[in-house]
Image 1 (cartoon, rainbow, N blue to C red):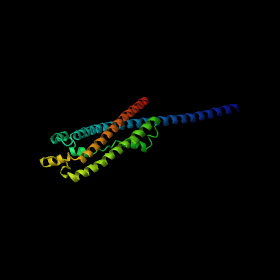
Image 2 (cartoon, helix red, strand yellow):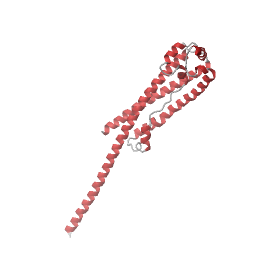
Image 3 (cartoon, rainbow, N blue to C red):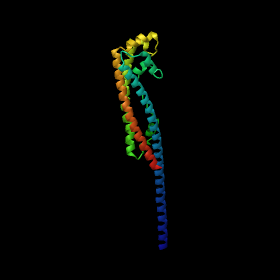
Image 4 (tube, helix red, strand yellow):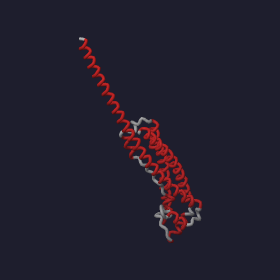
Length: 231
């Protein structure tokens, strides 16, 4: 009887150990899968943050160019040298488009949207990174979009003023027949007001996107540090 009980106890213990081992292996497999998925998520996010930094660099260059020309025109309003200003703008937007138009900002977001939709971001175990992602993909861009929208609204008003009063220069072409219209335009106090306000908005947006770039760089460093610690 004792041998039977002992044998039964050993069999039970073996079964118990087998179950526990199987559960432990499953847990380890799930943990490893989760870690691997999180690693891929962090790497994908880091790649997109890098794309955003490059994109913002391009926008900074464009805004600095528009602001520099705007400052020149505003400073010399009423006495703008037409030949000089057209040389300054010949390789990019013409002078009228430079003064009136706005730069749309469409940040790369497809990777984040995909990872957010499938729950990958929610599964990250770094709460600090999730907070930063929410700020840099949701909160901060909303401020930039609002500023650009204000510039877009101003663009439409300014453009309407130009169309009504200076239809010959709307397309930005420049020859001797339009010179008189440009001289009148650059003596128009209303056009000066629009141009000045546009430049104020551009400088505000430029400060925003530069601050945004700094935060993106900090996020990229944190992502890379976290990725490095997981390897």
